[in-house]
Length: 312
Image 1 (cartoon, rainbow, N blue to C red):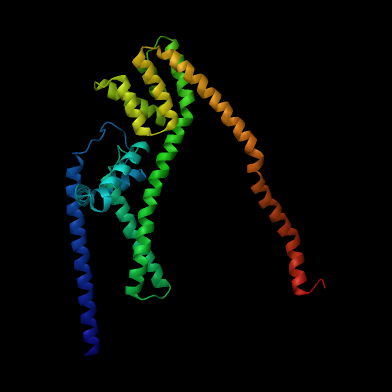
Image 2: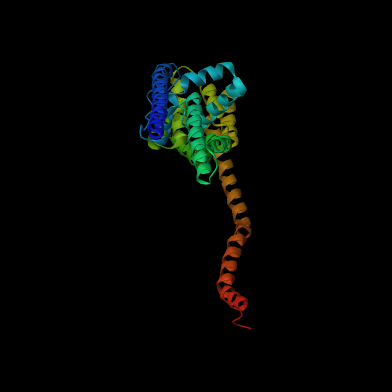
């Protein structure tokens, strides 16, 4: 009788778990379909080429299932979600990922990562012998916070890295456009030449966005200002400010670019001198590690023998 009751209870537990999983899958499927419908209302550049196998594209598809829920959270601004999404929107633009996903989708990615991280941490507590409930109450929140933070940190790092590459490419782009303008090209044509010849370069992508804005009827000044707001970079802001002032005052853009090229060239030399001055200081720590390793290699066996009494 006890065996029969055990079998029946196991079957009941298995059935309840299966029904719960089926309900979750059905809910996720319905939410995903609804997310696919709602994503069409967002402002995407449909002409942008997106690799569907990239990590960002895969993450965006996961985020679709959470899109309806996150839109409600955004509209209610619960726990400051609206401001958080606005910050992520800015970082997605800086990272060049806005054509792949929205901030609401990215929040869905964070929610998936938090769930996975919480479950993994809960399983880790079980490996250390904690109870199911105690391990869940302790491990799931900790793992959830860690899992939620990983995509956020990754997005911030991707945005900073892309802006750093753009800043590094800016001096070359200025001299490139200056050469094009010396061949009687206007500023938009010079930007177009750089865009066409430097495909895949993030600065070329930003120039392409500027030219698209100009084609849609935006003035060159406003299009360049929009580029500065997208990137939020001091170096780009200084360059774009000089160009926009030149356009507003009627100063020849060629002269502005010549001045900016000279300034960036001097800045490169100054940066190289600063790196050279600090090279010796920065080399001290690696040398210290090498010397420490050699000392341990030479003196380690002697110390072991002394401890064992072989050299006494």
